[in-house]
Image 1 (tube, one colour):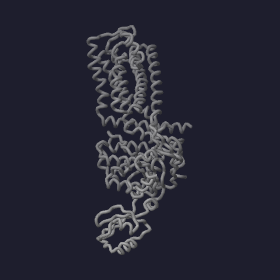
Image 2 (image 1 turned 90 degrees about the horizontal axis):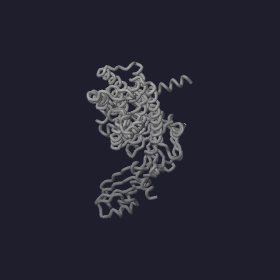
Image 3 (image 1 turned 180 degrees about the vertical axis):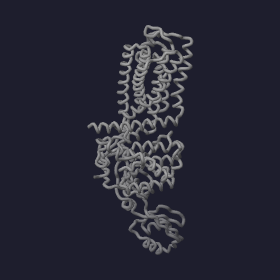
Amino acid sequence: MNIIEICGLTMTYKNGVKALRGISFLIEKPKIIGFLGPNGAGKTTTCEILTTAITPTSGTAFILGKSILKDAKEVRKLITYAPQDYIIDWPLTVWDNLKIFAKLYNIPKKQINNRIEALLDKFGLFEKRECKALELSGGQAKRLQLIRALLPQPKILIADEPMLGLDPAGKLAAFEALRELKTNGTTIFLCTNEMKEVEEVCDEIIFINNGKIIAQDKVDKFIKQYANYRFLEIFYNGTLSSENIATIINAEIVLNEVGLIRIKMPLDVTIHTIIQKLSQQKLEIKDIKIREPSLDDAFLNLVSSHHDT
Amino acid sequence: MMHSLIWLVRIMIHKISLLIYRELKNMIQFKSVLLVQIVYPLSYFLLYAIGISGSITTISYQGQNIPFILFLTPGLIAMQTFAQFQHIYMATSNDRRFGVMKLLILGGIDYPEIAISKILLSFFFIFFQFLFLVFGLWIASGFAPSLISLIVGLIILTIAIIFWGMIGIGLGVKITKEEVRNVIILVITLPIMFSSSVFYNPALAPKWIYYLSRINPLTYTANALRDVFLNNLSQCVNNLLFLSLFSIVALIFSSFSFRKTDLPRRH
């Protein structure tokens, strides 16, 4: 049975904004999916549709075979949702916020305290358990939201920008918790713009732009496909202009300073070839630094290519 | 069949008790809300009912002259049901505005559970306010209603809470902006209270006030309670019927209003 199956979802809001323009994709096995896209691409709308919070204009989706339209009640039992906005009972304590949802998720009474304690401890909020939620910082409130979504060990976790505002320790705890969830068989649908977190934890990427799915692939393949170059920084002494250097080695200039040139180099060109070509021009190379392409580069390429089209 | 019904009821009770627990916790954090539930009826009774009955000793009601304090106390009890409207409206609109209601619905809570939990919690407060005011009436005037009167009184109050609670939920899910909400509460409070029979007998007031009072559910609540206390059973049943009609309309309004929001769909 497929974990998530989305078939031709469209969403047009009352104000006429077309958030989704017929998106379809399939997730077959438990994994961590990074759902990427620029602001306003339709990520949150997709999340809200999958959680049954909103109804699509047309199309449908299935969560573990259950229709979001016909079996919404069943779907809600399979999913927990960590929303992008802060949705918290602000006057209540951290503990009460979690206890109420633990009870709502039908966690056995005997396990509730242990489960909450373990998660609070993992996310560094144990000391804050008796504080009112409104006394928490933004990052702490975000952690609280994530803990709440992790309480029931759901089949599917839909998390919309869960790491936004988290400090490095919070992110680390979140990564660890997400990996642990995955090993327990949970599929995590991570809606985000933070490329580092995607590279860190995601198995697969789905890229959405302007309400359309542009790409779906494994992280490394995605980077290879959409950022098929590496960056090279050459520190040199010599008389050749950087434009000439770029022509000689047949690459695109990204940065051009005195004695330093940063170029975008196709993956099939070896560094050895470049050094050879530059040496032939009697250019003294002081240092060379290489940066492998990142998800950020693939993201930017994909967004800019779609702006162009 | 029976087993699944029992199972469904148990789940519903679990969810309702959870919602009540949540609201109580919220109230405990906002101690002022709890304080209002005690101070409001107490100050009205001490400063208003006892104070005014010093200068107005009797009032004409249903063709008989009755002590003013006996007239006013059921009115004050009825007024507490209207006060619950304000609490329910504010709590609902806050839950809606901050997204908590959406999250609760996604967690498996449904409209009936939200409505019932709010009604039950209001009933809890009204129950004590009712007993407290009846006790005050007994101390101040020596009048003690029978046990049957108390039970019927509680039934009347329950129906009145359903009315005000449903209006509170219906408005709360629709109108969530704090400034608009506050204006609504301010604008309707005085007309609702003073176009009813809470403080005086509208039958003795100008005709237009009298007609206004006939479309005001607070009038029927106050009168039904008075009729119970005065053993006017046929009048009480009349008032109760009108009040029930109002509550049914409010129930439909609330359910319709809930469905017409962008909250997650009910199934």
